[in-house]
Amino acid sequence: MKAVILAGGSGTRLYPMSRKNFPKQFLTFGDNQSLLQKTVKRISKAIDKNNDLIIISNQEYQFHVKNQLKDLIDGNLNLILEPKGKNTAPAIALAVKYAVEKLGCLEDEILFISPSDHIIYPEDKFVEYLKKVEDYAKEGYIVTFGINPSKPETGYGYIEADYPIKEAYKVKQFHEKPDLATAQKYLLSGNYFWNSGMFAFSIKTILEEFKNHAPEIYNLIDNKTYEEVLDSFNQMPDISIDYAIMEKTDKAIVLPLNISWSDVGSWDSVYEVLDKDENNNVKIGDVVDLDTKNSLIISNNRLVSTVGIEDLILIETSDVVVVAKKGEGQKIKDLVNMLKNHPKYKQTTQFHTTVYRPWGSYTELEKGERYRIKRITVLPGHALSLQLHHHRSEHWIVVKGTAKVVLEDINGNEKKEYYIHENESIYVPKTTKHRLINPGKIPLEIIEVQVGEYVEEDDIIRFEDIYGRG
Image (cartoon, rainbow, N blue to C red; front, side, top):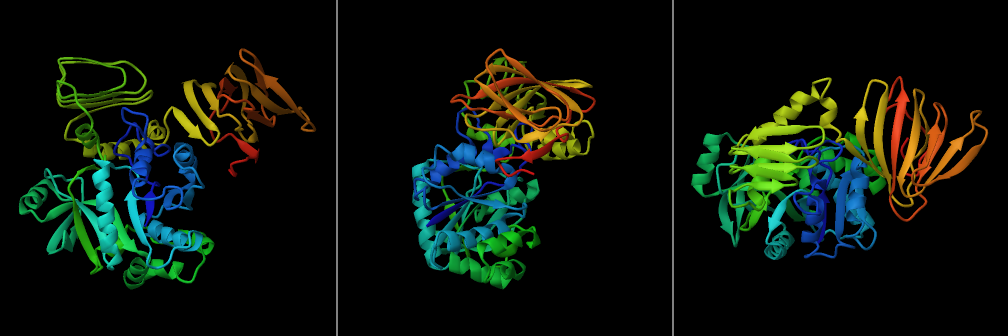
């Protein structure tokens, strides 16, 4: 069995920690492991992670994926990069083509599809369920895990079960996220399950179902090479596997997953799965509370102190603080949509003050009308692109490590190299080609002061870049 982890989503419901440039699957909650890392470790208990694991993401997130998995994957990382986000059905079709062509899978190979941002435990019991879905998939079924609902949840889709097939059930119908009254009815009926978004099927079965129910996808992968499918990927419809296949096929069965599961799809669900103190609070980071109960409080940068609050969600980041009533977590998505349309605040839905790049990261410390101050971290052996700026000059001060700086002379005729050590600095004039390199063995940290009439990120022209950016 091969496992395909879908790691390209850009969820907004965990704002302000999750943002477009650094979404939920890369976040950690109270420990040092991201949801993606936990997913890989969990699935690796059932498969060979160095040969049977496929990660599918997109160009924007590839360096997050590579950085987070570099210590988990010993061999080559089977990483698929979608040219454009097209939902789960095209992603799965691309993964099928990759498995056949790049990994040599035959049509009877079983593929297990999993999101990258769920919490599931105990993991050993989950592995037992993976063996069960593999057996069902070998019989020609498309298997999905169903979660026994513990409450009338309006944030999940539901699966209506029909007659039993051993431990599983024939799927009668898929249902969209319901209103509260409908969710209560589903809970009482006893034959409705939360849709986990995890699937298993043979390559033969899924190709047949694409041909029968989603020809607009099948025609773009049939008799095509993997590279040809990539080239035509933008022509794929933006459609989920539920709409494209699962709601139409007669081969769908649901296997109840009777262990703890959460898609961590809202701050309310984060609160539910994390450990609580004696007052039923979840506290992460620098938090001091007094007479506080039943609340989720997360501090990322500053001390957060609470007095006399109850049933609240409080999330602090360096540039945004969100306070919400527990039970209203699903509305965070509506808040993000409001901010996206606000000219002053839309940037906060895309970027943190710390922005990750393939070479490392930068953190904005302060910004004024004609200046911007950053802390830049360059990983050992990495380098920024050879670039120039039309509207700003830059002053670099090394605070840790050694910097190798490449500067062209004012006439653009010659490049000179300078080594800058701790507490030394260098000046980069406007319209001067320059490059910052970390030649050392430890992360390089510098303070960058930008001064000019325009200090936004799009004032950059790249001439050479080892990461393939234009």
